[in-house]
Amino acid sequence: MTIRFLTLLTLSITLMSCSSKQTTELPAHHQPNYTRPLPDGERALRLVSIQEWPDLEHAWDSRDLFLQDSLDMSIGWFDAPSSKQWFPMEGVSHEQAKNSVIAFKTILKESPTKEAFLDAIEDHFNLYESVGCDDNGTVLFTGYYSPDFHASTSPTPEFQSPLYQRPIELVSHPKTGAPLGRQLPSGEITTWPTRAEIEAQELFKGNELVWVSDHLDAYTIQVNGSARLRMDDGNICYIGYAGKTDRPYKGLGESVLEAKLVSPDKLSLREIRKLYDKNPAQISELINKNESYVFFQEYDGSNWPAGSLGVPVTARRSVATDKSIFPRGGIVLVDTSVHTITGKKEPFVQFMVDQDTGGAIRAPGRCDLFMGVGATAGIKAGKQYSEGKLYYLFLKPNSIAFVNP
Image 1: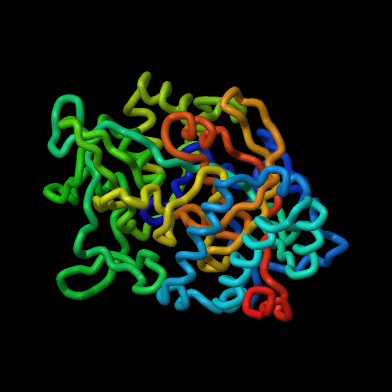
Image 2: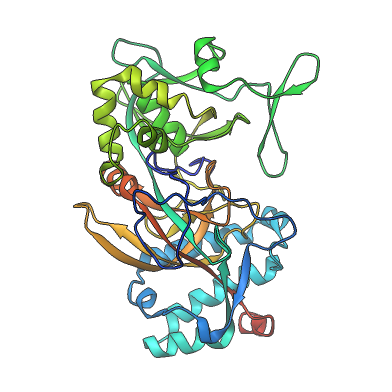
């Protein structure tokens, strides 16, 4: 995630599971391994024969201007020469990936009917399915959002929990940005201390960027990877992801369930907030089970909220996936279920665009749906936890002329 983003993940994910091929809400007893790594030498995507394509009609019916905007953002990213460094990926070239988005947008705009659209997609595109967590295509879809918080540039009785700038000793991979460790004065690179150790030792004291209200707000922003801050002087400040330590991630939702503080069907960000307000020390202890620590930087906010591509992400049209195994910027079809603001579950079959990544989104069996900005989006993101299928659409090699005749 970038300026989102350590996949702006929700706090209530990570029961870690994987079961049937059907889109389903996870039963309380069900615990598959959604984060199963892609085996060495295997591909994350497999070609789907036309006879096994999912029904694209619902995705056509749900098209809107926001999908067009999201496609435009990806096209703009592909136009930048820097985007070429990420290809080829999964056998897809930069030209093919870029032209796929352009062709899809053209077909979407110019098709007079649903039937004409479906015919054009079948004629010019191949469909690929994520192998998922079980090689049967099972993917866990969680949600993330860009939150609004109140903050201060200095500690006050109201704002006591700091967010830190990137430390100079943090070493990251120059291409992927993945954390490599902590560089000691001797030049040796070693593993970072845990979250609990960092905070107990006040390891980054003097490197604070802003202060927020409490430990849970600070943690929520770390998990989401970005935030819009309403400062106590009346100004608006935008902060985004600037790196993280190399310690393992563990979702707070998982820890809350393990502690039997709430039942799986009641788990949500709002419920975690209630638990924290009642017993801050107890939830803070569970927060520390996530050893990973995230750092931030301020930016101008002109493209906020931005994903890992550096372009704005779009509510219910942008997804975050593992960019070490999936191609960037492409069109995806998501087939899962989501919850409304009232908690009602409904089918969710939409064309979206792969424009982000996340610290906990690290496998072919994981995908994060961007739900939007603010409190309402946060409620939806906190409820999102459903299995489903993830597909990618790329132009057939002989259809490149469709874009460049």
